[in-house]
Structure formats: structure tokens, C-alpha cells
Amino acid sequence: MLSRILDLFRGRPVVVSGTSKLEEGFARRIDVGDPLAGGAQFLLCRVDGEVHAITTECPHAGGRIVEGPMKDGRFAICPLHQYAFDPRTGRPEGDICSKAVTYRVREEGDECRVWL
Ligand code: FES
Image (tube, rainbow, N blue to C red):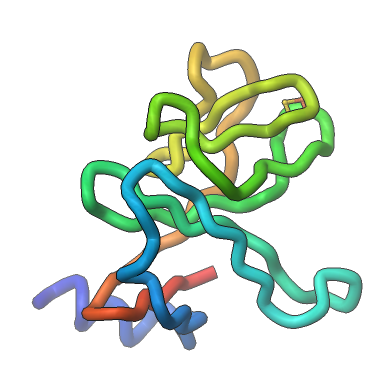
């Protein structure tokens, strides 16, 4: 209840529909507007039944964290150097670089609200 009240102060969320189809251990890319004109891009990832949001911008060296099956069903991958990131915390597996940005998510039925 408190988190719902606090959500009112977090600004307007991005609403993504059809998220109940996101399978366990998979990441799905979401584009918000035109990425070349101030838009945003992030991944929705389902881990342990919950949906988490992580940026596609890899904090290592400018690569992109990609959609698709996640490593061990838990880590989103940047294919440039094969670093893996936990979408729950943004931490890289093995703490080999800084954390990736994560976002608050609330899943309700077949849609998610994401605060960027
Ligand atoms: S740029 Fe992503 S792992 Fe190196």
C-alpha cells in the first residue's frame, strides 16, 4: 500500500502491455519513443516469477545489453564482451564493472508500469 502511495510521487510511468507472456528467464526489449531523439530503451526481464527492468546501456564499454534468453535464466547479457547483469540489482556477475541502471517496476495483470 505504501509503495503505491509513493508511486504517485515518482512521476508518470511507462506502461507496457502483454507482459504476462514474458517467459521466465527471458528479456524483452522495450523502446520508448525514438532513441535517437531523446527516447529510452530498456529490458523487461522475468526472474523468479517477477518482472524487473534494466537499461540496455552496458556500463562496461558502450555495448548494448540484449533481449532474449538470459544466462542461467538470471542474467541479461551484453554480447560485446559477454558480461552478464542481474536485472534485479544491475550488478554484473563477478563485480567486473560498475552496475547497470535498473528501474522500478510494478506488474499488474497483463501490464507493467516502469518508472524511468
Ligand atoms: S561493452 Fe558490454 S560487456 Fe563490454
